[in-house]
Image 1 (spheres, rainbow, N blue to C red):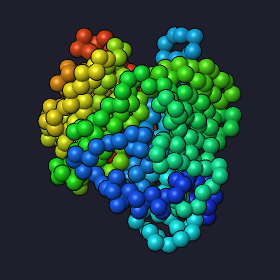
Image 2 (image 1 turned 120 degrees about the vertical axis):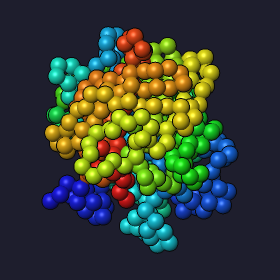
Image 3 (image 1 turned 30 degrees about the vertical axis):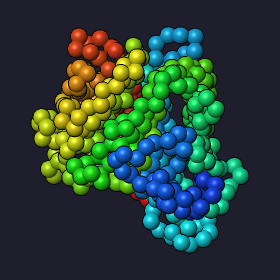
Image 4 (image 1 turned 90 degrees about the vertical axis):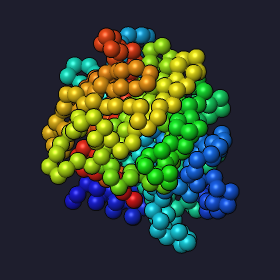
Length: 394
């Protein structure tokens, strides 16, 4: 049987676990009444409320990435990704009961190992969320980040400290993460005070904030080997009513923690390629629908990039044997804050999410280099829409 069909069958039969936001039915009505979940320019993001879920919006994700070293010091040895997605299906909105699939939840986790030839492993989860039946061991709060799906979790506690727990099902060849992530800087509101354009039309937008330069401590398990680790991480939280404008097939994105404490975000929505084309076109501006991002210094000076102030130049391509997709794993990115090179630290960091979200993408630990070729930062490069047009199944 097709793996994705197996996951969906488990979901429909109620065997995939679940995540519940207590009082969701009432909360959805309250949010709709006061416009909390409406995506609009000028909406003031308020915290801690906006750390939590926005069930009235179509899609939402909490996205965490980082680089890790041994706790005693030394070079970076691992990268990690933990992402929770929520999708409002538009189905069974008025029907009671836990089998009504009003919301679907997905989660992806990946661990990149740099030692030796390098290794990238990933797992995924999917669950129906009725939002009206509270499961005692699987819940989330509307007012704060408290996302739990089976044995996976991302939670925010007093003082703004995040914790994440991931334990894969792969037995002796699996991986696990138990990390604490402490903020060292204020939240970064992307775009126009948290309103981020995602297309040429005003309605094509998201609410989007980042938490860069998180200080990480904790442990990881790779197979049967456990390691105490420390490092640096990046958190994005974004919600929207649309994933992509019709003319775009995917995006290229970087979130980089610079070694001097600065933070660089840059993204562009990539125009759909002609049939039979692969990789990026490399034609300046021709394959970009819209671009954006920001640069914040360690001292807090913030520069929001305009829609036409960025240029992505693809470099070396890597071809996936699993999907045939060809990804630029090296880039040159022109920004108002300078010209940087982005280079993956392991080429094979493709994540096949066809068993959950229905999409395949490349998401990997990468380094940021200045014009002289000196490493100035570490973070994650994300590329979607290369195997097929990006979509989020519900």
